[in-house]
Structure formats: structure tokens, C-alpha cells
Amino acid sequence: MEEGDSEANYAYYALHKLKIRPKDFVEMDKYEKAVVMAYIDIKIDSDKKQASKLKR
Image 1 (tube, rainbow, N blue to C red):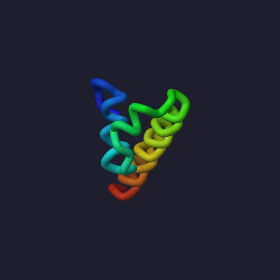
Image 2: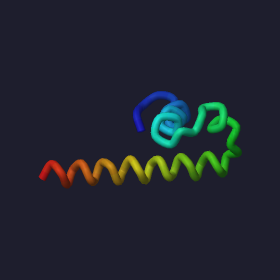
Image 3: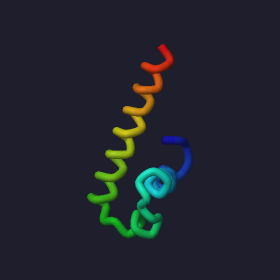
Image 4: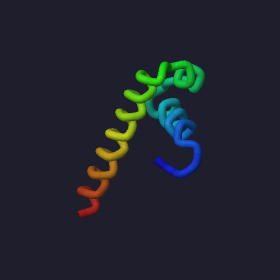
């Protein structure tokens, strides 16, 4: 993710890509939030790899 407040970046991604409202994201317990953040990291990594393959 980008620099700055990482939790805010994850909340932004969750809203726009996963349709999870910021309020719902903030209210998640730390374990649920950690899972969502890990899934976001996996998705971003996958998207970057796919974009790299398409450039070749």
C-alpha cells in the first residue's frame, strides 16, 4: 500500500473495491481486520503480477 496512514489506505480500498463501509471496517476486531488487510495485500500483489505479465 501507499505511504501514510496504512489503516486509512486499507479502509479506502475496502470501501471502493470490497464495498465495506469505513464504519464497518473500523468496528472490526483486530483479527477480522487483519484478515481483510491480508486479503487486500494478496489481491494487490496478484494485480501487480498480472499487470507485469500483460506488459511483456
